[in-house]
Image (cartoon, rainbow, N blue to C red; front, top):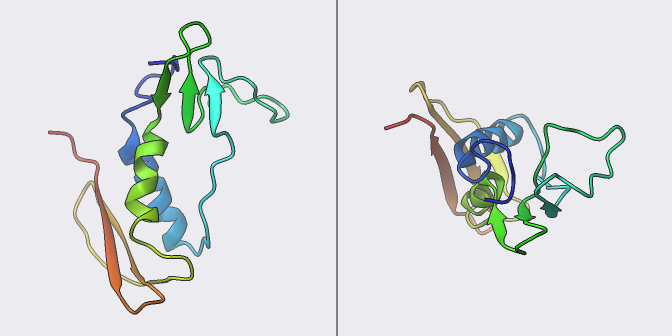
Length: 121
């Protein structure tokens, strides 16, 4: 794994929960700023640099040129493949610990539900 951040490639449920909360709170899009960074999070053009962001959507090991993919990378398709551009998020309810969801109506009239289960085991 290129990044030295624990769980860099497996924290997709954390990112999925973040995306769900963003969409349920009126976000119109989700954008990733750093697509490809090295194992030290460089180049980081944020001012001041952010040590909590040591990897991009994809990270590259500067020595081996090996790519590794973040949890963020794995979470994106769960949303982008189902929720179409112009979709409307609608209210939905559920109260199960560790389960989050977002519901949408796409412009073609289809309804989708993206569910994240962050429970371990």
